[in-house]
Amino acid sequence: MTAPDYGQTFALWHGGAQGQWRDYTRHAFVAGLGDGTLPRAAFLHYLTQDYVFLVHFARAWSLAVVKSETLEEMRTCAATVDALVNHEMALHIGVCAAHGIDEAALFQTAEAAPNLAYTRYVLDAGLQGDFLDLMAALAPCVMGYGEIGLHLAQTCTPDTPYKDWIDTYAAPDYQAVCKSVGAMIDDAVTQRIGSLATSPRAARLQQRFTTATQLEVGFWQMGLDA
Ligand SMILES: Cc1ncc(C[n+]2csc(CCO)c2C)c(N)n1
Image (cartoon, rainbow, N blue to C red; front, side):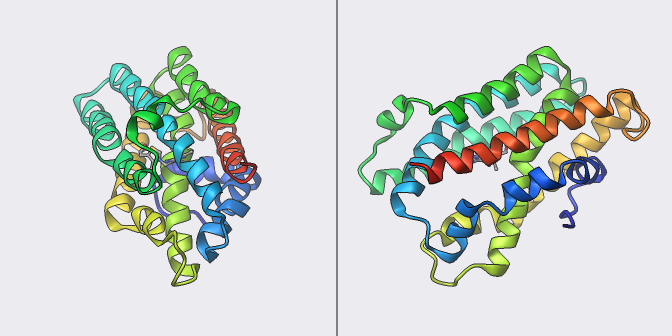
């Protein structure tokens, strides 16, 4: 499976987690979004859980501001926090409101265990480690949805009810986010450890990326099991 071009570091991490990456980006939940067979109840369950996921993800990107070592890193991470809390969640709020779930109810959603596991794993990667540990745990989320969006836009049934969701992640705007986060990670690697391929930290960073990818698989599965 060839990865979209989201930078050198992503290409290495992607290559080091191929089986898990395929399970994530080609999950049955994803196939159901593409061919329109995903039950609406499963999508709504996913979306309400995902709203809470984004709350904690915004906390993780805020931690990335704290762990930044350059103003450029701070700008990218702070912009991601803004995009998450002021824009990305609008899709969730809009779709859920149309089904009678208001924002106060969304915020109160009890987290399912796979959701809790994923976000707290990412936060802990950042608390225990440095900026690179945190980025390795954040990258599957950002880049995986970029790859899924591109793949589904090419293969989906034209009348799938999930076209808005697909278009959000296939859109040039979102693809540009994946590329700019990928470029920031490449620069962060160069500044901190030189070359990833020869660094003693490579194995641990790969483990962070692969574990976060597995947690993404668990998140889709939680949606299907609803
Ligand atoms: C489980 C789960 N994984 C990934 C995303 C996608 N996503 C989460 S935050 C963000 C913006 C940049 O960090 C994007 C695209 C999601 N919504 N839910």
